[in-house]
Length: 255
Image (cartoon, rainbow, N blue to C red; front, side):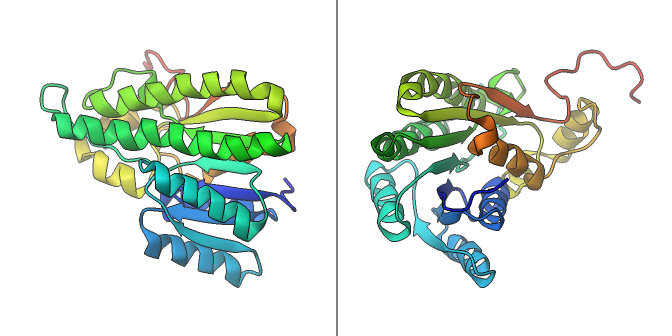
């Protein structure tokens, strides 16, 4: 896929899926703004991209803060020359039972994972509408569709991301902006390493037909497809990247 001449903003770009999206977009020719609350990590990724001869900048960004989001989009447009692609990968999570989830945890995850998607999508879309072109890819989760243990706040937030993505797609379609989301399953990222206990990993792996966790690179490849011209007639779609987890029912041949 060729992204030459395209300008992308990647949130959560300092690590995990976001970092791999930034790398793949850059390798395909895009100028990339690497945004993350972890500015040191974002700067390291941006420096890595610049070292390859690509154009990239790092932006300190708390996606739950509207002022920071608006400033980050404005800086992307000012320093890189516009905004064509948003891959919104920033998010947090916790493995906590419904009865044990505190109000503070609930609000924090909703604010970052759902409100952050709203704020970043709205700010980016306002710029995209001006030019009559845009690609927005949100990162949801298979937790939006399955009632997994310990996913009360996280699953609710990601379920909201799914519906928000569809509403955005319908309203932005007349302006030349597509909006889709990925629903990763178990992916080996820093966040998942914190969320998934040893028991969770064992149970999860057994429920995945491919019998393994996915990689950030595999999710990033799907994000690039949705951000590309190849997907220009795809909007409002939620693509699972989960090794068959959502498709699976009873698997008698697994140990």
